Image (cartoon, rainbow, N blue to C red):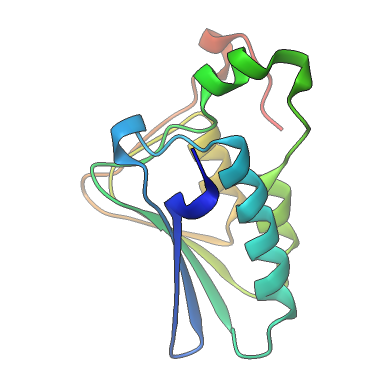
Length: 135
């Protein structure tokens, strides 16, 4: 899976980053996490961007990292932290949540400055059930 599953659009000084991998509950692959980190750095340095919006295609906001890929890569998986990248953006970052926002997806949303949630948004932290620690 490639990083092109993150779509971007800049309009009226707002950069919208859309997670577009609905067949996998918008779980982020390694390439997607790395690209999100780069997009955050780029947005922070871009004087044409005043606000960043992180959203996803329906029906799920994000299930977090792709656990199948993590299991395949094992110890070869390089460290990433898109939540830290979102927190490091000096401009306002908004999560627009319109569905399930779970585990690592919840970490992403909580790393934003604001969360706007529709009436279909659902939030859950299942790190303990997966045996992992949130970062």
